[in-house]
Length: 442
Image (cartoon, rainbow, N blue to C red; front, side, top):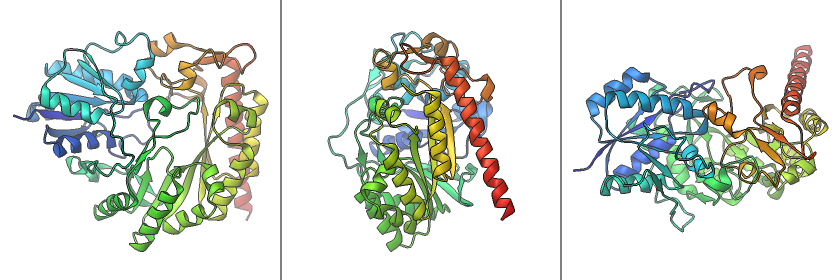
């Protein structure tokens, strides 16, 4: 008899709008269990109902296995949920997701994983690992490695996420005033930025065909959604594919607004890309600029220059796209002067919105694994003690901890990083006030 599998999405208290969108990871896992006829899935989102709903679902569904997929910011909440589950049932808990996979770079694993988690899936193919467990039973070892992926870069073999297993009406995500849903048309990124986990977690670009991507868009529209948040690591990497998707959206008159992550350099490589995206409904390009210094971008292995970023931003804005950028304070070799150059870039290029972040050292990043190369000290014991709250999304700015420092003049000290970050954020807030004042005068 096929095992019953309860897939749990823990709450996101660290997000400002936690619970406004479903967890695609669990919905893909559920869809795969049905596709392979290996398990009977049920999905619960603890952003809606919490512990009482979980207690009720476990008693009513009576699962054979319980799966928890977690990211690093969810770690503390996931551990709390696992402990809560163990008070209700002795059924095995299997944890997977990017945080678990990143733990392969932490020498204290599996020791730091709580005993309530019976098995940990490490690797890029959690779907196959779950299928194997359902078909062949629980493994003898606690850590299960699952890195094998299909050789083809085409992902059309994947089923659509099992959105029917959650109440879609509970999700309030909107874009441009329209009801929206997250979607992924590709996975992976070939770049190796020092602060990013993708070089370890998912470094090979794989994608759905344009036809398959647009078919999912159409399904979401039938469910009452006219907005899309495209979760791809970098949607514009294969610009021919992005343009083909845009052509299909125009041809089928989808009339859906969407936003996606891009690289400014992709607009430089293919300037007509921006106009095509805008014509098809794209309203915002999310671009990771990170720094206004070429030397810092080079050390961070971004594969871009300030000049190309500026040109790409100008092309996007000329096409009518809003530009949201991300800036990171505390990259290797960066100085206070470099950080202020980043603020100058934002001002001079009239960036629509900026997310300013203090560099958080996640365990799967090149920065974490190659500390000697970057003359970097990471306060690993502090991070573990604070339950991996590296991003500290719920903390006030003044309460944030900088968890890294540079030695031998290769960057700023930890106290200097935080001080500079607060200063630059204040400068950006002043800039927003100036823009608001000018708009008011008009």
